[in-house]
Length: 239
Image (cartoon, rainbow, N blue to C red; front, side, top):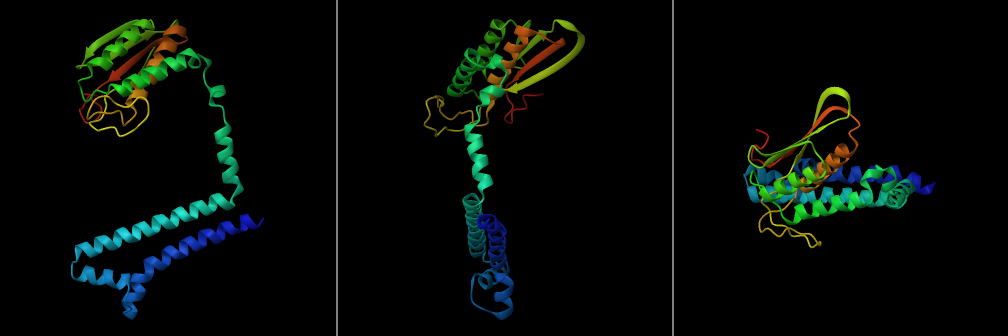
């Protein structure tokens, strides 16, 4: 019970500390007390940009530290936060997953994603990634596989076995970013100045997984169009 009563105390204390810092400018200006608030006002009057920038950075840092301390105190005194964290760590997500994506398929998609991550390609020029995607779509039994769409784009079409004429499009971007990877995991980028920092390796692998399931089951009417798009990161690939 004592810990629960501390929650509003921590909240109000954190707010009051922030308020004291914020209103120090007003107090020090009115009473002409020396301090950071008065220093900031004088810097504004004389257009002292370095002092103003330093003051704002310091105040921002103080607020971040206050918020961090409050969050840590919440975690220490609120039993609900601890129990929620323990529950999340103990959840077996596999039991909520489609059985199709477990076992061999799960490992296959993991390997595909990691391979794309190791060999990133930037912009509209993604020949290796696109070739692998097209070959996999053909292996999965996708009815139509169109390569070289708008450059290195790939489009697959799967027809359902049920009545219907609807068309549904699923899209994934496949290009990487012009960044140097500084990670140290076992599948870092091997291409200097390029990395999948925006998750497109995962997007492509996920859509390949959907293609495999849809092509194997076909429990839908009409068709599903799979679009693998390069050039999403500022290269107007969608055009």
